[in-house]
Length: 164
Image (cartoon, rainbow, N blue to C red):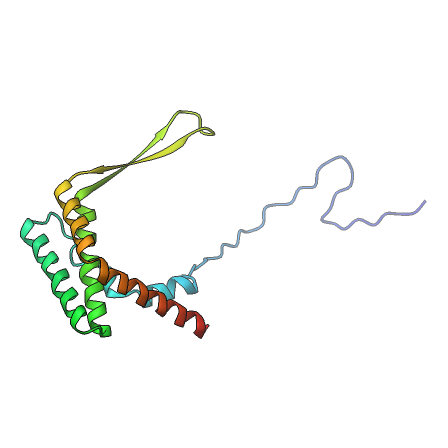
């Protein structure tokens, strides 16, 4: 009969092998931001942080934003330089941001108790209809300038695609 050689740290038979737990080695993982997050953080323009984020606004401040849109539009009409385009975009962005913040309220509701059949509904309530009408009138009055900007953005996008 052949002999079976068993190492000292193992047991043979029906008894389960028991080993004392090893000392746990915990690694401290330092998760760094990915490349995209780092680039996004470093390249985020200051214009995305709107100066109009403080609420509530008075009608005088809204009128001031509206006047800024008209002044930037007139400057763009006289001279279609890149500085005027940027100023006009910023003025329109600030005005639209203010109108959206002041005149709309967003509510999210979920239906039912069954998790599998649950649906999520989003309700948008119009709070200030005067601001909404004012924004619509501005968009109608500034339509030509906005069309020019849309075409310029399209051309810029095509140029960026060519560079890639």
